Image (cartoon, rainbow, N blue to C red):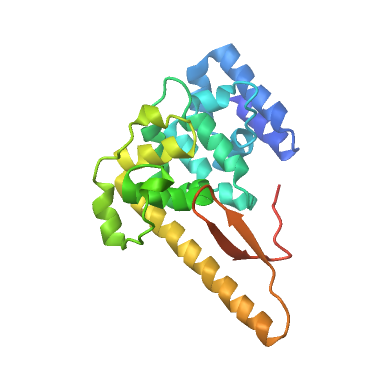
Length: 250
């Protein structure tokens, strides 16, 4: 079935009116019911759906975020990187608003994202600011820094640890944010979380090698290579070379 509201929403998105586009979709739900909107979202290209849901406003409920299906959402999530948002703030906001919505199974969304090509990269982007504490959780089963010896485990050892029960229950860390997100991945999608950790480890290693190389070049030239220190919560710091031309697309 063809829905005129979809054409209207696409034209508004093209014109940069995201609020108007969402209103057009909400109007469809009001007139023809939630089921009609779910069917209509299947006709909306992932890039247009993404344009609407990534502008999540936590001060009000979004009908789109409440009704989007795991498959529809995963198709949008994997292309979010095209916005080149270095902070990943919009990604985290829309992920939390959809995955942790009321009366919803968050694991369905996590699995749909993780099993789609590019999905584990998106999950890694979501967890990037907390990679150290995520890895600590995999080693120790808890998010308490005092429980972690800091030992670096091989990928095979991480896999073994992954299949041990966590030392904390979900309700103890039910923050509807990265800790609960990580707990759910470990408990229900360990294979996906392992792949995410492999990606995060590779990124950290690349950042360190890049920073070391540029620092060495700076010494040879008698200059100094600038870097950005990104501090997570409890994981220390990592040095990432700064690209002066690197800007967010937002």
